[in-house]
Amino acid sequence: MSVKDKMSLDQYTSIVTGGAVGLGKSMASALAEMGSNIVIVDLNRNHAEATAQELRSQYGVQVDVIEANVCSADDVLRVREETVRSFGRIDVLINNAGIVKNAKAEDMLYQDWLDVMNVNLNGVFLMSQTIGKEMIRQGKGSIINISSMSGIIVNTPQCQIAYNVSKAGVISLTKTLAAEWAPYGIRVNTIAPGYMKTELTEKFFREGGQLIDRWMSMTPMGRPGMPDELQGIAVYLASEASSYTTGGVFSVDGGYTAW
Ligand SMILES: NC(=O)c1ccc[n+]([C@@H]2O[C@H](COP(=O)([O-])OP(=O)(O)OC[C@H]3O[C@@H](n4cnc5c(N)ncnc54)[C@H](O)[C@@H]3O)[C@@H](O)[C@H]2O)c1
Image (cartoon, rainbow, N blue to C red; front, side):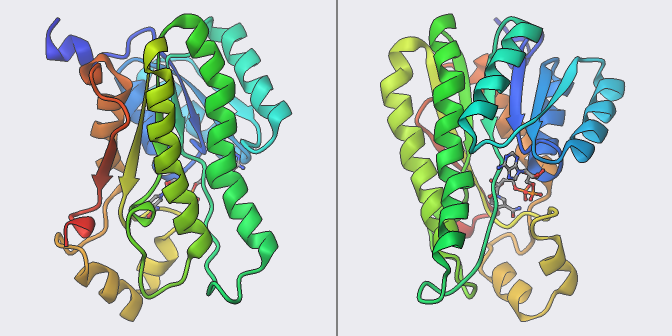
């Protein structure tokens, strides 16, 4: 099979959590461009519907929206049932939904800690377990978890203990699932982006100042990443081109973790 054929996602069904905006939207768009039907799972129905419409008209694939919370077992079960009912199978799951709440460790409200852990780590486990059962039944699947360089290093100067710990947890979860589920034909990998210019961080870049100067001075490439700079790795990990790749942690951070 040619590399071009291996990269094709024709006839695939891919679920992208948090796919309404930002990095999730960009990765959903890349998978759609390569031929995959898409299910956007997001809390924000309006943004998700707008993105779905954009992808349908641009790429001619089927794009469904399921308004759901990745932390709710009932919602996640509904995501599996509705996706299987509409498409008959689930080839790819991108666990991208995430939140951030910054606070010094000594000041962080326990509820804020729980909220971050719930979306960023528990939600990834719940989605992986629930969708993974269908992939086990199929004997095939690719799960792509979006962690962060924050799961590898400690960001500075801002304090974000819950976010860092949740993203480190995603890396361990990825490796553990990769090891447990390799016999079922399921590959599990994680992408660890650096500072990317999206809705989550746009206001920091707009305001500029010392924080941004510090971040960029610590990034060998000296600039933030753009959402479309995750598209290549997302297509690679979703497709047959990565058939021997599992348990991997892929940094896309302009070199931040190299220094
Ligand atoms: N932006 C960055 O610089 C950066 C860097 C490294 C990692 N990341 C990670 O990439 C992922 C996407 O980041 P982004 O900047 O595009 O975020 P974003 O805030 O722009 O978008 C997140 C999306 O997730 C949805 N969402 C949030 N909680 C949800 C829940 N409980 N259930 C379902 N949907 C939910 C939101 O509605 C939103 O559409 C996150 O996991 C984030 O931690 C981002």
